Image 1 (cartoon, rainbow, N blue to C red):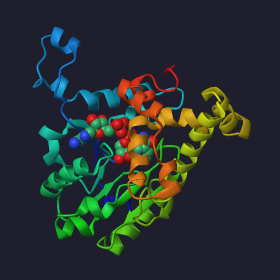
Image 2 (image 1 turned 30 degrees about the vertical axis):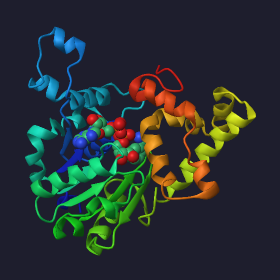
Image 3 (image 1 turned 180 degrees about the vertical axis):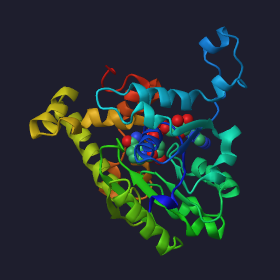
Length: 308
Ligand code: NAD
């Protein structure tokens, strides 16, 4: 079973991509982790005299992701020796390496147009028969495959991991009408037997199953808080430790997910529903303001809480 996936590629090394790459490494699969080249130097890089073509700058995101994985405490997502199975690179210089991979997982920003641009490149460089999947939280899988080759479409599906991928067992698998049934059954068996996941096959509807319910519940809680004048601490204590789920408190969860990603995910549904349901998926102003300030959660060091 493992033999079919001798090497994997994960594209996008943020919150989820780095975690998925770590999970693959933990089960012994060599993995290439790619991200985009930054288009701006930081002031520190400028002071050091670096340029955008320096390798250190070009691989900034991926290197940071690997360093973060090494430093994870107290529950490491992986170990130093497993990290050796992850090869970091940048998309611009290293995309041809995906031709060596049997499974390519897209884990970039939650935006259909950007994902489609990436899949056009992936289609050009991948080998025939390789599986390609998206970790989207809820964008239409079929829409992402539009315009792609027949072989791509046959081998393309959604594989929606949950955060953090090492610990959360659910894996939603989302085929389209074009996905080969053999590809779907392979991913289901591989997900269960090799990755240790519990598989739920979902229809290609906005936000699939878990996020359609989860985003709704979370935004209803936020609305109740605003209407009732409760504090973030009060809501988190009632939705977390008090009900025996310390890690599921509303705002702690938002910090772990990343507010920018959450807003994209809520908007996936907002645009496709109407009436009362649409009102629930409307993002409150204070969240948009936080996003503008860059208070995105753990990944930016500040969200509803300061990162400790
Ligand atoms: P993130 O913001 O942490 O990371 C996104 C990464 O994609 C960044 O490193 C960015 O540099 C990179 N990127 C952006 N555009 C790119 C491009 N054109 N090519 C290559 N890389 C590019 O986001 P995330 O939270 O890891 O989410 C990634 C995907 O996973 C999204 O589709 C999201 O909806 C989904 N997801 C997120 C969560 C979560 O809890 N955060 C859970 C499940 C699924």
